[in-house]
Length: 316
Length: 289
Image 1 (cartoon, rainbow over the protein chains, first blue to last red):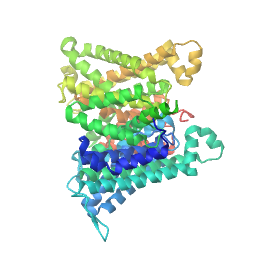
Image 2: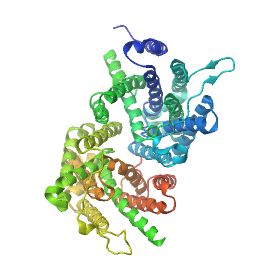
Image 3: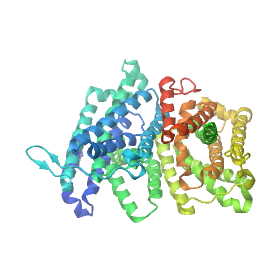
Image 4: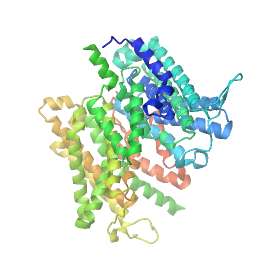
């Protein structure tokens, strides 16, 4: 096997993503599937910023994902038919909520942190579920469409042209992922790693641990709510199930499946998970059992994830 | 109005008793083994369906006795072959595993017994109102509360006075030392898990009589149980009990004035508790680290 350094790996991933609309139909996929992989990958990579690189287990990220989705839907439907404004408001909603919730939970650790995030995740689900007149309740919020984006000199028709929408998502994905990579390489990111490896020692070094975990949580939720806005734009629909605990579980399993300790892991996990889910739910009504079984098998046999295993093979 | 408020408070107390019963099982497992059992709601539903299936043969009382035991046995099998492998690893993995199990339970129940809600009969004499004035006070409701009280007292007696209970309490404090002293920790964890699942099964048999029997019965109760544990205090079983009853009553009272907030109010309570007292009402200090 060729020596595979990180840079060639990343270059290969970008080439694959950039050319995806051209080769995906050839292998039997469809455009929306590719976009969905990107959206889920962005969500899981954002979660992994917290999970894999700060060592804090959040099991409630669906809440911020869903706030992004409802933010963009409500903004376009009730406020103004503008996609960029919708995305902005969606991200704002998710981030502000995360900043508030984060401040409440930042002192908790381990299983308890996970449990509180699960519980808080449900608040927004119940609000969306119950506030029928505004959120559409259980039926979700439809009756709106993503709007073409006007750049002044040119117009990007993301509504009529699926490929254009894919490239918009890819551009936002690239910006977000790039920002997270830069943050992780900066002293801030190194500090997060230090907290992950040994919180007590980090504290003794005078690092404000709570502040860093809070910041990491908010940054992670910012990008996850961006993913949520794209998720709603993709289907022109805000789904209450995007807010629910099963979605949080999906993000975590995607990150674990791909490899929590590697930067690109969640992208690989998302590709596998989304394609598998798409296939299983087209084949059987009992897809829930298969997804559940999939969770069990991943935990028992692939706890390090695909990239974790590859890295080990290469190293040995 | 008084009657309406009384009705909703009693409703809240009963629901709170279920939350508490379920949360106590969750708490037992969490405290000793560090596992958040997301499949707890699935076990609860399983208990209810076992009771439904047994009822034609054994009657309500027989089902009440047998179904929780069967559920606990399923729990022991699950613990032996799946959860046991994950002790001592990052809690992330046991959480994901039980999360997958919750999916499998819900879908499996739907596959076997169907998605629609099933007729679940409790003895008629239990289901008649005790007085025409307080129409909501049926014997079944009183009976449920009574049974939950008995179960909780039983649990606390077991934990206080039996050898198993003492070991569970000791293990919750310091499992390594307990192991060094010659206690079979594997067995202890199994039995503790079984005890927790027994409580879930019992809650299921009772809850189905009030909430109706459908595959999602467990998942609607699990989130409030988490909240009950957090509000009551991590690591404290009396706290969990108190938390369950508190959030039950709170959501009952709020239903009177603003029914669509009846679910959200328990999370508001949780936020307030976390803000003022992060370890929960009766939580031990230092357990958060």
